Amino acid sequence: MNKYFQIAKLTWDETLVYRLNFVMWRIRVVLQILTLYFLWASLIPSGTTLFGYDQSQMLTYILGASLVSSIVLSSRSSAVGDEINSGNLSNFLLRPINYFLYWFSRDVGDKAMNIAFAMVELTIIFAILKPPLFIRVESIHLLLTFVAIILAIIIYFFFSFLLGLIGFWNPEVWAPRFIFTVLLNFFAGGLFPLDILPKFIFSIFQLLPFTYLLYFPIKIYLGQLTTIEIFTGIAISLVWTTLLYVVVKYIWRKGLLVYTAQGR
Amino acid sequence: MFLVGLERSIWYNPSVVISVSHLSKYYQVHQKEAGFFGSIKSLFARKYETVRAVDNISFSINEGELVGFIGPNGAGKTTTLKCLSGLLFPTSGEISVLGFTPWERKYEFLGSIALVMGQKNQLWWDLPAQETFLLNKEIYEISAKKFNERLSELSSLLKVDQLLKTPVRKLSLGERMKMELIASLIHSPKMLFLDEPTLGLDIVMQQNLRDFIKEYNKRHRATIILTSHYMKDVESLCKRVIIINLGKIIFDGELKTLARQHAPYKLIKVVLQRHIEKNSIQTFGRVAKFQYPEFVLISPNEKISELTSKLLKQLPIEDLTIQEPAIEDIIREIFLSKG
Image (cartoon, rainbow over the protein chains, first blue to last red):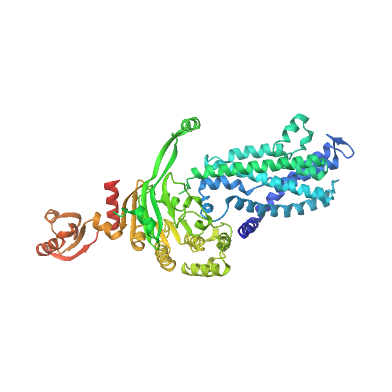
């Protein structure tokens, strides 16, 4: 296990080498949050409701979605496709190390850094704007939110890895990833709460894995889901996690058969 | 020749560490026609061509051997190394390395081999090389004591002790190569595959590296396979060579035997005292080079003394030396005749 801890630590160190780059990235995230925040604050003036959300619920949803998406929807494994194409993958195949866990450890290092900064930023935003947020303290909801986020991280990781594995068959790995990213934010509920969609569409969404990346953890936090809904959601997440794991493993094995370790 | 009885000997000889029998590796290469319309066409109907990178080769290598793999570009050297180190699945044939099947990539197997490729890098670009070494320490599960011993041994052998804390991107190419080597050897692999290790290095560094490889082979009784385009690497390091061309082995044996078998002649280099017509020199034998006052004659081994005395008697000679043909020339001739 030590090796994976070391990888997470090196990823953290590496981020610190390009401090300016990292700071600019964080600034972009903050600006994005503020844009969405002011948009929804003016759409739902205080004391009114829209789609069943009052101002504080909607603002909590939007701020929560930004925070959760900065934790969930980022993965270093987006480099997998390039590593396959450049032949850099060989370096890992030659060493006694699990390539999935390698990338997952890098994500852990990366996410730890992002969470640390997000905490600081949110505190500052909170202090300046004093938004009417919905603060939840019951530990059972916090715990369930946490579980949902962990599952979301794993599901997204598998998706990202899968997109990288395209590299075994096709050198153009970025086009599919780009389309995926654009659609993902919508499907996962990064722009608005998914339950404001027509009921029929929403019920289809509930079967897709994307719903469980952002929308689901935040709704648990907001306390707007019944216990049955929460456990159904976690069950569906688990099914997707298992399914994706099997698919990723299968494609990985198929890919290694056609891998040519090129680049030289 | 060498391969006779290979299949039997694997099982009886415990010191055989690599055995390859009837290994083939074919690639499907996608052919694209040139230009824009070629690209469009290739979207719909792809043409594939099978390239036989390695075609039914067999050999075996004993523990502690240092073997040179020689062949022109695209001969299948690197593909063979990749199959041996478990990167590639063979299309057909059997490979056993240290008793393992490479492509299964068992951790125990991976922990005892290293493949060093001239241009591949495993170092973390933005961090000091030491960080990569520490990571490898964890990956290979090396104890702190062993790690420190190995690191100080390797870094002093390669003279880079001072650079361990410098970010990799600030190192020169040669320094980086050395760091790559340390990273690849920190787990004391018993089996070493070196693919063009001296590529891009200056003459002094090349020599350093050769000394280092020799020393490593002796000190750890490591088995080493080396490919190189520089015949000097092979000549100074390897007793045995395997020559491969178009995916097939065309020679496997000692370097000495190669010269005897494929070039049963020597070169007589003569410096003249005064000018002699080229025509009259040609009566003595085949002239390889004539540039007054020097000329070089090619003579079959058995005629060498007869020809030398004839030359000394009949020509105004200032100096005469007998040379072995250059290994490079021999190999070039082999490629040209059998390719």
